[in-house]
Image 1 (cartoon, rainbow, N blue to C red):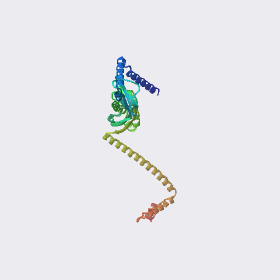
Image 2: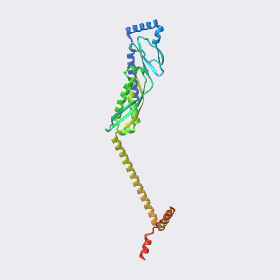
Image 3: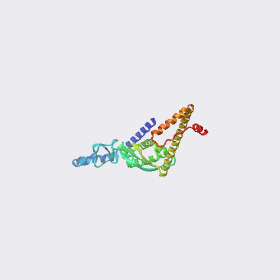
Image 4: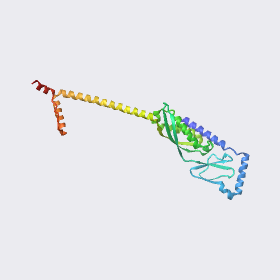
Length: 281
């Protein structure tokens, strides 16, 4: 935690130093031009008012450049602000959250399996001055960086981790992107993995493996059932052997069950000792 706070403090200090360099003095010649522009604006005041007043929306900020230099450490807006028509120019920056899809990336995982992965990234501009002065196109740069970060993060994972730990991969991507785009004035709010596409042959192999595992578990369960049934039959045979009349009662119970089903044919089992008695006669 201390290391993260120290790194954030260093990044904030470097960003402030960078902004302070860009908001330096205009110089003697620059101030002369600014003063002349101000006098020109005052002399033609009824007409220049339409060129001096600008309006931006609640979700926008304006970064003002005076003779090519940033005039203030803080962006202007929202509402009405004033510029000099000849020396000042401004760039509008949208502060709303932007989302974009990461195109499907063919990635080789750590265990040498090729998968196609896509995702979605949500980000916003939290420092308008840095987003304008530090990178030419913050939106496009963030999109390219998201693609490379997805490849780098998934390249360190095996297939099982890619399929089961999407949330962890998304958090890792968000942390890497947020750290890389901090100097650009970009805040990555959320990263999500949308879909992981496997090759058709690998899908068939995984389906066959899962089916074989299910069949193996079914055979084990059936074998355990047979073993438990044989133990129960063994215990029942021991009980019946201790009481010969119990076997006869079992015969009668079986006959009662068969008669209740309204069958036309009833097979009556006879003990072998009774049959042997008639055969001797």
